[in-house]
Length: 224
Image (cartoon, rainbow, N blue to C red; front, side, top):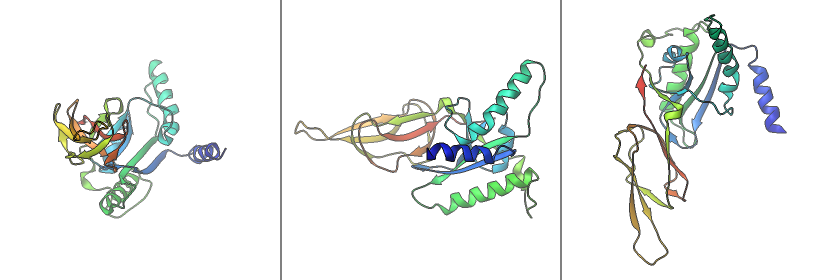
């Protein structure tokens, strides 16, 4: 099948590589962030992005995961034998804005971050890179397992939604759902509130939703 051929081709291309950068844009509206693997947090600074999701659980579907996970497993087994070795291999997925509309700011951030990372690793020599603030750059991390996704409890229209990138507190309203019914009654407004404190980093492009459709993602980010 074509999808398997494509997958094997990608894997074969990175067999001899040390660094993999997978560049994405969200199918919804999203802030700029990257996926990072455990024990590689320090290197995440070089991309100069403010937010990162830490891969503390795996589903086997991601390209960056398929490349790096065997190396991480080997490091773990060696550590269990008393040999602390960190291989010079890293893998990243950059999520740069929305895929539905071109965001020049996200593109510029991504290009700057990739150039800075490649210069910091000594792969490329670029005038002005790596930038001086690389070491002091602060990245806010959220564990992937702690990301809370919100789905529409019933069909309706989304309104009064919090802004993308907003910090919300537990119990604070995230959005209202204008729900229509078949009982010849006026539509009802349903308040959907945050279950945990965090940052809204992805929101649905579509404001007309069916029951069970994705609305937004919220994560608890902290500096490490």
